[in-house]
Each structure stands twice: as structure tokens, then as C-alpha cells.
Image 1 (spheres, rainbow, N blue to C red):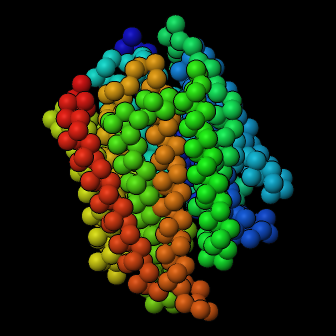
Image 2: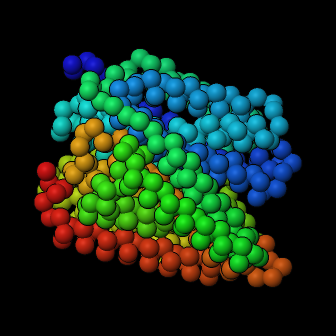
Image 3: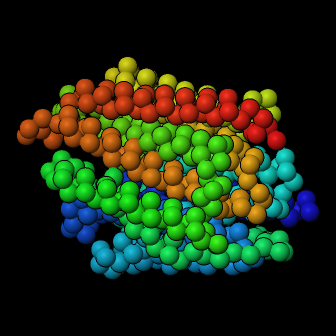
Length: 461
């Protein structure tokens, strides 16, 4: 048992890290893709958006399949799809095939919740709690790992070389899963609600499209507003389908539990703030000196700014399970949200030298790490073991949408702060965006504190 546990835990963490890092590869490569494939930056942006979309759609489907008897087969099949997609990104094929490959890579994001389900089923309760927290953390800090490596490879060998990194690590993840993933416990059953999956996919497509197409809001506001209404209607229809289904994709009734609903609301708003600051800092670091601010860093060097984010995020992830024995999960969420808010304050007040950006990113990483590590405990405290993957998959859908909106809000605020004929926004636009982030984290903090008051004992079980 000890030997199998010693092999299983690193495998779970490695797979979660790989799928997160590979999905984030689109971020540093957008400019390189536009240049290499002779497409616009807007089109190149879809190499990131389509991965987030496919991940958001695949997550609840895989979560439901992972709750059944064929979890090992589901994990292996999903990683096979990710490896095949990675191969498409490396082969000398047209841009459409690159998008197809990125969509296949994004499917891997759905494996994070399955890794948590495996940990909860096959590890002792105390051990599983800390492993689940760490899985949640590495699924976030994976971007900080993949960003500088991909940027360096792109500078040295071009965009195909950078995507080659994704192929290598996903192949390694597949071999790791084949050697270490156990079968699900007996007595499980799972059915996928196909109608619910289709409607949810359509709704998420609209949400992420609206989040990514910033020009649509500035130039065609009525169209954007109509599409937003359609997205809301589709989400409402999906909710009705799930409530009426005997085998729902996501148990909406369970999601409405005060602890789960509060945690997901905090994740949504907190996700907006977290990704907003990540976007602001990396963009600020790459802005040339000619704009009157910024540091003119290359993509690779700007990626190194994420190192404190990843390191301190990992540290917070390791510390949180120990602290949680003394402090309730919702209070940890609130404290972590305050720390993230502190990162915004630092960025808004002091960004005149590179060291200050490193400090802000370190504070952000520590807050995000603590927030991500505490989140599963709040949800799983009121969730049966058999529903672990399904419950956490919904949380990751919420997180994906929050991240996308955070990125979009940052882009909209900076676009609004860009004067006519100017290529870069005014420095004050970054301060305005930071203030918006502080507001988002304040809401996340208040939501978490409200949750702590309503369910004072749920997170201590």
C-alpha cells in the first residue's frame, strides 16, 4: 500500500501540472503564432481561447465519466486525445489544424477533477486532503511553469519547438497514468447527459467568445448584449435540463448547497481578480520604455516574472492543509482573497521598477495558492466521495469562466485607456484596472466570510 501510494501521489500531481501547463502554452505564443501563420492577433488569440473552451466543456463530462466504473479508461483515453492534439500542434499543418490541436490539448483540463477523485478514493483521508489541495494549486501555477519555457523555446526554435514541449510532457503524462492509475472502486455507475452537455457547450462558447472578443463590446455593443442574453438563456435552459434529468451532467441541487454555492461564487469572482492581475503584470512588463512606462522585456524574460507566482503559490499550497486544521476553510478563502487584493494594492501603488513587479507577483502567487488549496476542502466537506470528480469539475468550469472574464476585463479597461492614435494605454489605465481587481477581491472576501458564518462547522468535518 505504501509503495502504491508513493507512486500514485507524484503521478496525480504531475498529470495535473502537465495539463495545466500545456493548456496555458497559448498565452506566450500568440504573437509568434500570428507571425508564423500570417494571421491576425485576434485569430491567434483563439489558440488560447479554444483550449479554455474545450477544457470548460470537457470538465463536467469527464467529471461525470470519472464518477463511474471506467475512470482509469477515461483518464487514459483523455490523455491520448491530448497527445494527439499535441502532435497536431507540432506537425507542419495549416492554422486550422493548430486550432484543432489546441482544442484537443484543452480537453486535458478536465482531468484535474478526476485526479482529485482518485486521491479521495485511494488515499487515507488525511493524506488525500493535502494531496487534493496540492493538485488544485498546481493546476493554477502550471501557467507559471509553462510560460517561460514555451517563450524560451519559441525564441530559440520557433513556435513548433515551443509546442514540441507540450508533446513531450503530455506523452510522459500518458505513460505515467498507464503505469499508476488504479481502477475505480466497485459499485460505481455513471451516465453522461448528452443534451445537457450540448447546451452547456453552446452557452460556454458564447461566454468565452464574448470574453475574448473585446472589439465586439467596443464597436458592436448591441450585438454583444444580444449574445450575452442568449448565453444567459442557454444557461437557464441547461439548469432546467439538469434538474429534470435522472442522470444530470452536474447535480445542480448539490451545487445549490450553501457551502458549495458560496464557494463557487467566491471562485468565480476571485478568479476574475486573480487572472486580471496576472494579465496586467505580464503586459506591463513587456510594454516598451517608449510608452513612458514599462520595461520592454522579451516574452521569455517577462515569463520569468511568473516564477515568484509559481514558487510562492506552491509554498502556500503546502502550508494550507496544515493551517486548515486550525482555521475553517471559508476563513482561509477570505484570508487568501485579502492577500490577492494586497497584490493589487502593491501593483497600483508601486510599479516603477522590476523588483516591485516580482514582489506583486509573489504576493499574488501566495494568495492564489492558498485560495486554490482551501477551495476543495470547502466543497468536498459536503460532497459524497462518489461525486468528488463531478463536484470539483463544476468548480473548475466556474474558475475557467472567471479567468476568461478577468482577462477580458483587463483588456477592456486598458483599451478604454488607450488614446486615439496611441498603441499603448496610459499608465493610469493600469491603476484603474488594479482598482477593479481590488473590488473583485473584496467581493470574494465578503462572500467567503458570509459562508464561514453560515456554515461554521461544515468545513471542519
